[in-house]
Image (cartoon, rainbow, N blue to C red):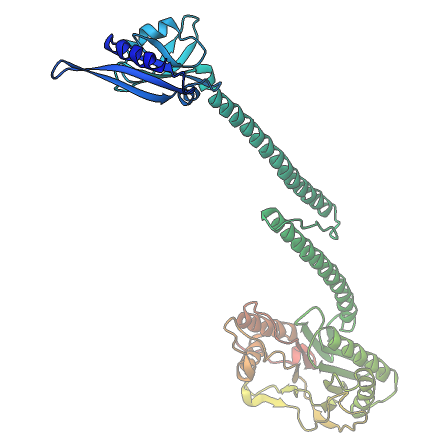
Length: 484
């Protein structure tokens, strides 16, 4: 029986047919026979081989996605899918070169076909797949990509919403905090939730709020201190004479300018009967502490004025005790006290380390020169408050009608110009002589001196309090006028 199969295979090949038939003796093994025409010598070659039929059938079986065929134009389908080949496809194969192409069947469905000749007779291998199935993976990929894109957009939106809610929440909190600060609540603070720009803004806001709160506290404290200093200044102004002295027997014109709100200088005059008391002192430093010492000095002076016939040395002794009890030697005060008998022109004075006043004696010819400036420095003693108990001496000077005495504190010589240069003693004395020579009365002379000093100062800050006053003994008409 197998020999008959081989014979049929041989004759079929001669007839240019492809022959495949399973052997009876060996199931699964078949005879595969075909003819090859040789163009060079016009000869024919018959090929007969044993093949694994089951293996071929398995190789060309349909896998559900694509269909494969072993096909011959003369013999039709040799192996392949149980699905019949499209007749239109079979007619298309004759014109199709080896390769891959798209084919539309009789039912209108498109297929993707791969086609290759084996080189054995006219046998070809065909593989077809529906375009829908072929592109199904692409569709799945597109759908999955779309789903992934949607999920990505959704997650991005959720993250953006969360981040924006955090951002807007932080900004809203900052806005509400600034509104509270605008209403005057400087204790408000915001919670720092992040280390980004918004967190940095929150930290800056808290720092600003802290600084503003501190500044407001300082401003309130400064306002309170300024109010208290203004009160102290008002009180201190009452310690000075309200008016200059204008008496037929003597005239007194003074000036006081503190270096701060309150000063440590004090001057005054007291007219009791025919006695004119002349007071001037300079407490250590300036400001409120020194002003308190001047108040103590004024209180002690008021007590002295109430006692009969108190000499300057005794007055300074009592004032020393009062100031020492007040300052406990922490703040001292230089002081000069003179008592002028307006009937005789004799002045008794005592000094507690104060800059000695200058006696301006009317010179011959009427022009004041430096030799006519006589410092009253015959006696000197400890500063007031420096010791618990201190003794002071007195000296006397006889004034003639027309004589003048210039009292001052050392703040005048400490005046600086814009370059930081002190006025100094020599320039001060030149200004004093010029002011006296150019002025016709005590008021004009003091104004001349003030103008000269201010011209040197040019609104520079005062280093120390400036205090001065001028005593003119005798009536003004007795004074010899001098040329400018």
